[in-house]
Image 1 (tube, one colour):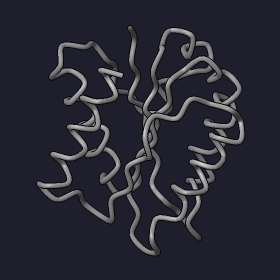
Image 2 (cartoon, one colour):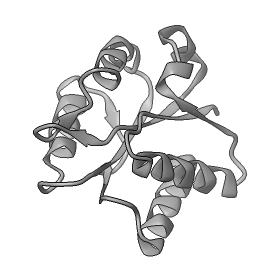
Image 3 (cartoon, rainbow, N blue to C red):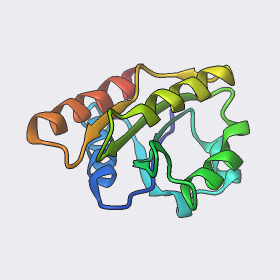
Length: 141
């Protein structure tokens, strides 16, 4: 079973989250890869059964529009048989971008794992533990 944790980060907060998910996956003895979006091409997607996507909220509560969104839109049609997890950080609002992302994934009929994790700013120690446990559950699903 191949798992990919792939993300874009602006301030490093989503990177912290990606690392904790990755560590959680590995802690239960499952192999995974941790990559930035520019390290993953559409042709790579077939190599994975599960993919955790990380993107922070940008602008008016939206996925990062310049780098992440164009990349994600290219990958999205290839996700029909994958288990998808979503995560990211935000600095304002209530994390509405994650709700919109959930709806987008569900509207396409994709297999969404739990509710995505949204963390305001830098994850606290307690939040990092929760993210780690999310990674464990994702690996074992």
